[in-house]
Amino acid sequence: MVFLMKNEINRKIEKFLLGFASGVMIAASVWSLLMPSIEMAEEQGVIAWIPASVGFIIGILFLLWIDHITTKIKKQKEENIQNSCKKKSMLFFAVTLHNIPEGCG
Image (cartoon, rainbow, N blue to C red; front, side, top):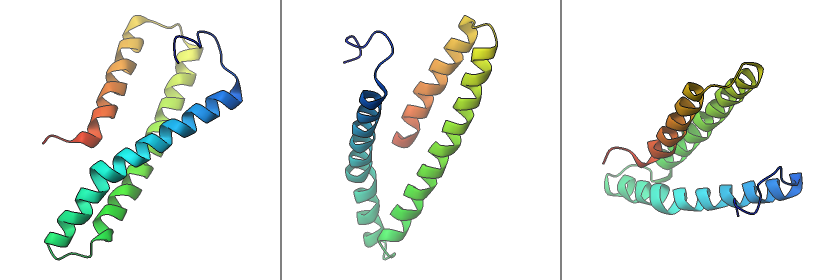
């Protein structure tokens, strides 16, 4: 899909694609992160939905915070001259952010 959309895309198509991607990510987090969390909490005798809910809410707040920061960086980037160092640091930041939910183990 990316290769078909070289220039700016229609706003409605962008919203559709972002909605689809967020649905896929929510499904992945439910089956890969939340369900195992609920099962582990049950095994430990804790109310099963509390750790999963707290973690999910913290994740939402973290992503909102990251969105706020990246929006500021993008605005600063548009105001300043773009250089390769900023591009590399944003790529590094994006890859790191993507891998945070997977954890260390």
